[in-house]
Image 1: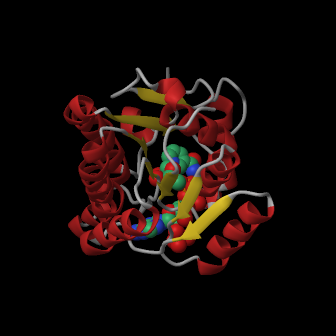
Image 2: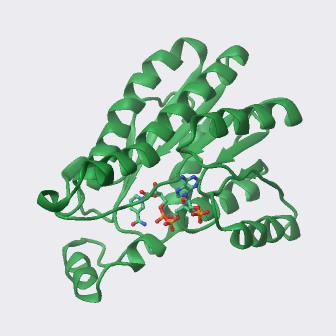
Length: 247
Ligand code: NAP
């Protein structure tokens, strides 16, 4: 896969989809900055794994929901490594509850962690990448942001907002040759879906045309494509990675 730049920041890369994205991008020759909030050991293991396989990685822990920390994290990469060409806004949380029982605090916490964080990342990336007239950002949203899901009004609002926001960033970034795209995974085997009850998982699988949950790597390759120069004429698009569940 062709990559023009050298450095990528992947948020929420200690586990799940983010870790798979980090592995794939390191294999493709990028230096991967692994962001996480609390999972120090998992992040450290991933860094060692990448290095043992001949790749380059660095750890950059911060809370993506904290504006000052995110801004400082990007500045650290730019100052120490001479630039940032790629960003994947992948970090995300769920806090599921039926809407009638959901407090404003539960709603806003998920919005802040999933959407406001991605806004901060996209804005800072546009400043840094825009100066160099080159860059590519991929946001990790969700099928739930496209079609909704009971118990997830907060999560669906955050991911639907992310899809719309990506289109606006794409329009602002295009004159500076900075591309913004979004992937919408369906149900993927990670800690996030591990929380689901077995009977609920079975019900979902029955509805998925490919008959199974996806693997983190299957999302990672879609992200890598959109990030890469192979997608140089693609911006503002949504790529669905959902086994045919929503087309
Ligand atoms: P996961 O296994 O729960 O991992 C979440 C990652 O995000 C962890 O690395 C976590 O770091 C990090 N994180 C969470 N809040 C953070 C914060 N405030 N600051 C920095 N890092 C933070 O989740 P996943 O299933 O891989 O999901 C990754 C992304 O894909 C999310 O945006 C999710 O909404 C989206 N997605 C997932 C699915 C699915 O089926 N799994 C489907 C559609 C979309 P720590 O370990 O340090 O907490």
